[in-house]
Picture 1: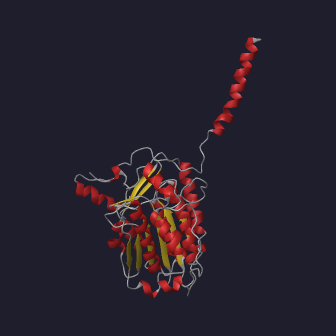
Picture 2: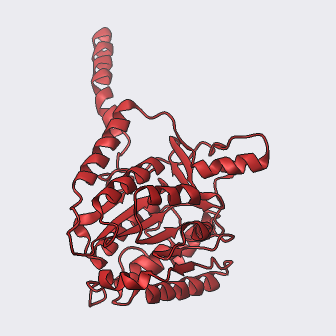
Picture 3: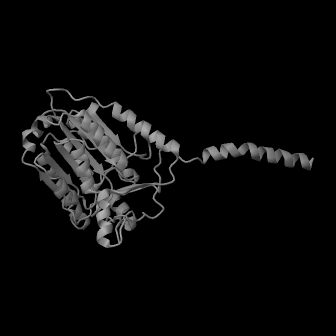
Length: 350
């Protein structure tokens, strides 16, 4: 009798294992956390050599299975193939938004930025979103340096350089060497100003609106400035930006520019001024060191941007998501010690 009960108990336990394993399986819509230190990706003997090596935009993938690589390539190929061709005689905008970090605030921001910018520039069929899981979905190609470079090359092939324009929005952490790519503990990299400039030139993309949301993103302005480039950055080259708490829906800059100013029926330069005022007000209230968003608009931009913006919404739409600056957001920033953004420590050359 006792032996029978023991066997029955063992069988019950064995049959219970699959159910327990299934219930404890990770949610694929939850982004992977950052646990391991950011590796030093630089090369060379001296500090100058190591810093110089970052201009090549080193990128590292580790612990990623062949199946995962194939799935991401399939997603990217499908998304690129779905982009509509340009229309001869019509100035078309191609929109790319990318989250380069797996903290879900960036994925949420990139997704909504794609909707806002796609609607503003009549580019719904020419919009590509590169973003990882944001807590509720994981249905887009993940953002990475390689994915962005491939996307720029493909879009450049679709565009007519003489009449079409690129609208690029990036959101991530950053440092004085460039934009930080950081996906969980499996993806690392630095996208340098030199590399982004080279990629745009190789793709033949001349007319461009480049909006870069990250700490120190002002370092991109000197490299990317051109007569046909409009560049907006979240911070000066020596300043941090704020609001990138994982639980947020927006960073300060993304909320101010994308979620508020660019929903208004105003031109890009006025939207940039509106966003700058909002960010400055929030930072003053929070007693943060000013991020000093940068704006650089080339002298030829005025010859083609008004035509693209002619179709912008005539009626402002309401902001969505949790505001980047409110009492709850401030408490979250303070609790996580993120009042002053820090770049990945090991990424900087020593």
